[in-house]
Length: 190
Image 1: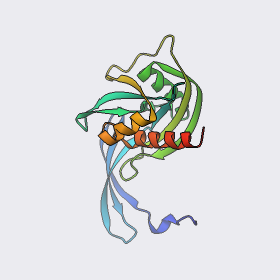
Image 2 (image 1 turned 30 degrees about the vertical axis):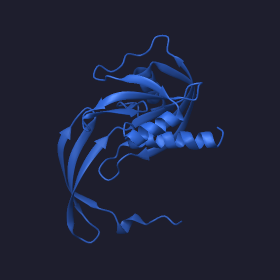
Image 3 (image 1 turned 120 degrees about the horizontal axis):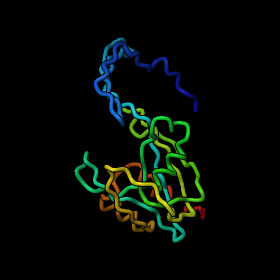
């Protein structure tokens, strides 16, 4: 398939209004000129990026964390994940190792980068890198969890994880991707 020439689709920023600069995100509103000459407004969120970890133990169970998600006003079951801190952009695997240990007290001896993706490109530049981690063991002196995170760790079989998707407790894209990838990996005998 041929690549599309973007010049017929590009939107030129005419004015940027920086509305919020936070620790995790920046929020701006751009006035843009469209390819047809009309004007439009784009609400954008800028983010340093994130990592997520598909950590599988020696009993073929994946590690998940229960946590309350304020935007959803409910508990969710997700794979361990976290934001890339400023200065870590060039080493997302280091961030993944830190997040796995902070959230679960686990370390892994084997790491593979599986995929990188934009989580919500319609309004955000957040880039998410997902890792496969195995040969898990408890950290002797685990890193302290973030002060504002309250998590509970659980290990599930593939069948249990698929059931949690059906129940709606696993409801985020990265974790649904992780369970689907895990199933495909098992079908291939890897």
